Image 1 (cartoon, rainbow, N blue to C red):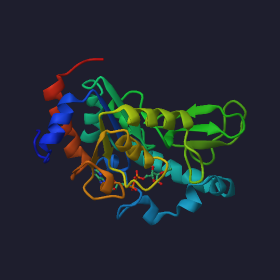
Image 2 (cartoon, helix red, strand yellow):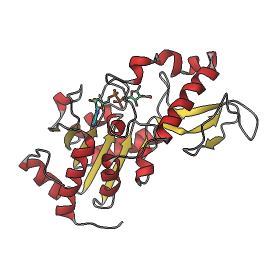
Image 3 (cartoon, protein in one colour):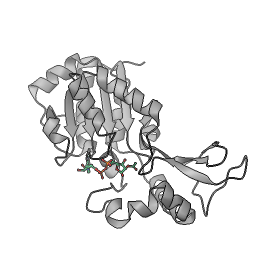
Length: 255
Ligand code: OAD
């Protein structure tokens, strides 16, 4: 059901003409699936110390503890499902000719919802790679490692394929995200506090390149002052509304 969110006439007009849309999501888009955010009241960084769990030094100091934490998160994620926000974004891809989905999330829920070619800025918790030979080990959502998993090729220690504090982002992913932000007509910043860089620079790049930047979030964030329009509400409500509007103007095209 569309029409629950207050969308300006200007945004209606821009959505009607939009040929290129770029979306960047953060932990908030998965909140309605039951995945905790990082900085909310029940946020992961309120209960756990990132310096003990999410840095390369922490991993080398205590790989068993770090793997235990990632196994716990993999299990949690494997038990939840994509929500209407994820599903609306997956459908938008077939409505807008040039649509790019960038995520800071490692939870794989966009792909499980049907999105294709998701740009993962911070990796994917379901994958790991070998510290010795670099071989990737794809995981399935059912695979929950116990202890320290090892490489099936060389026996080396696997690490989760996620970006930890102090590490650089995968450069091809960041580059593609920056390009999409630079050419889009509308940029949606969804469910992110916008405080972790360089991901948080992407909405700013879009704005500087002339895009209409829309924030979808029940709360204001560090990005809010530079936003063209805020849609204040949960993404599981706002994104299906935006999808309905886009379908009204663009019809339902198959790529
Ligand atoms: P945060 O936990 O910092 O922010 C989550 C945002 O989601 C907040 O602004 C909330 O207001 C918003 N939110 C909560 N529920 C929502 C809902 N139902 N709909 C829409 N928005 C909602 O998470 P991120 O911004 O994703 O990095 O954090 C960025 C990075 O910090 C993460 O990728 C992770 C973390 O350290 C790495 O792991 C490298």
